[in-house]
Length: 97
Image 1 (cartoon, rainbow, N blue to C red):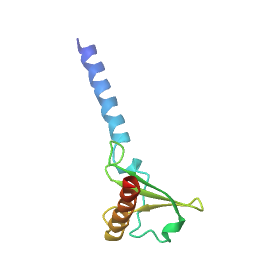
Image 2: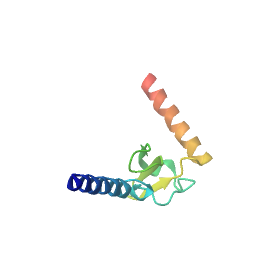
Image 3: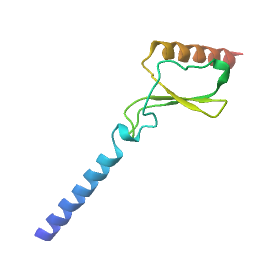
């Protein structure tokens, strides 16, 4: 009986430690965020918006530039919010045409 309890406790400890390793902001793609894009919009090739998940509790916005560089943006910055609104409006206009 005590062997079963010990095995169950060992299993619970392994599961708890693996969850602790996978969770938290250490698994986020963005370690540093910027409050502005820093380049003209014509150099933006792709914009990725990654919602919060089990691996990262933060929403992440990643801009891929035409020269291959990436830049993480601060989703709470007013400039970034304005940029996202403009891009959404542009997308909505294209979809209605």
